[in-house]
Length: 210
Image (cartoon, rainbow, N blue to C red; front, side, top):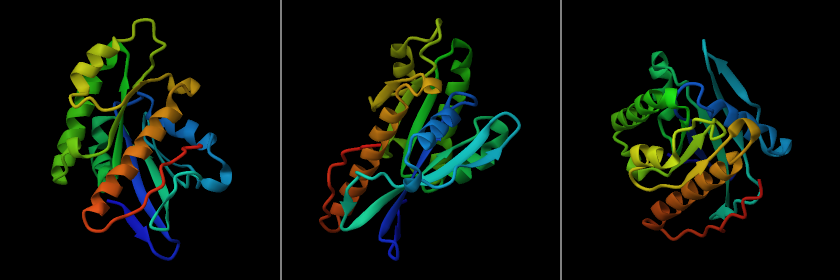
């Protein structure tokens, strides 16, 4: 749920990168942080687990426009993919305004994708949130693998609602920013639609100059 900071005149949104362990979530956030101007981003905080890091930072895109005179600030989070860190994933997902599901294209990691996808739906159900109602973007990562699972097969299994998706090579930055930009657009549009049910809001279409 978006948080309003009246003192700073900002609306804070939370976007969570979700997916199997070592699938590319951390790579996405480190790339985004490195390519965001320093004066528009906070520190990259890293909480290490045995195999994977949980990262988060906040940033203020310079061209997102305003909602009734309030700037949009985003908190980006990753979650640890291993099942033993389920409690951490549950806490991080709480109040998410949008989700990016990062799927691993390796044939050997498809079971991990399935477990992560089911876990995402189950944890959100615990908060009485239907994933279908959240802004959701898919990223099929590691598309440079010679034996990468066909995108059509991954779409059929994990993207039942035909949400936006991107083929990525996150370690090289491929489609990282495109995934992010689309997610932010969907989050802002969802907020605008929800706000309009109570009172009209003006939202400038973002130029997304990240």
